[in-house]
Length: 233
Image 1 (tube, one colour):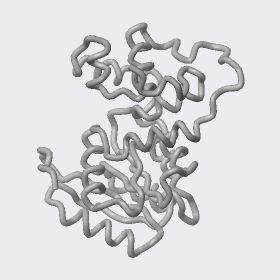
Image 2 (cartoon, rainbow, N blue to C red; image 1 turned 90 degrees about the vertical axis):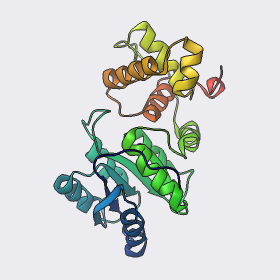
Image 3 (cartoon, one colour; image 1 turned 180 degrees about the vertical axis):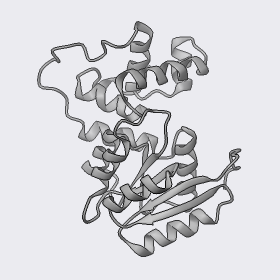
Image 4 (tube, rainbow, N blue to C red; image 1 turned 30 degrees about the horizontal axis):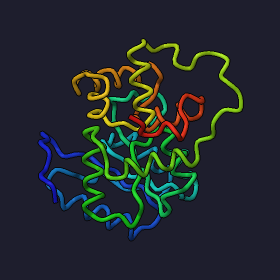
């Protein structure tokens, strides 16, 4: 288990899953960590909305396929209008990695996803990373999902989708859309990582997005990047 990040209070986690045994296992795993606390569980999306409203968790582990209201709709409702720096951060739970529902959750603003056969270490690492806004173990896999399911436009957009951005922010947008990390962007653009983070945060705020994956989705669906651009230095 990696060293614990410094936190003044426990990271508050909500678990949403319609399988009681699986949800109970996640709760036990979370409660066994000194820096995490499970603030409640829900069995469907409707209960999840009430739980988030009542407990204000930092991170929500959200199953995507549930009765009454599925996790995709619940994720979209929870994150609607929430700024990039605000909590909660949603981590989608799925049995299948390459799944259109996973893509839908990422497009709606989910910070990351976990498959239900993930190791306990990966679950805990992802919760901590989501809370702190750090890279997660499935970051590369999330980009693969976007590349597989994002639908490029059939015609050029009528207006410039990047109109709100400055020239430097446009550059940051393109580099993020290609899947580069902050470290790689800093090297390519001859900037400090702190400056890159500041620019990326500004891009997210101006475009009304919550995370880097949404930038990639937006780029693909507006014809601003293609599969051949991925990771190209």
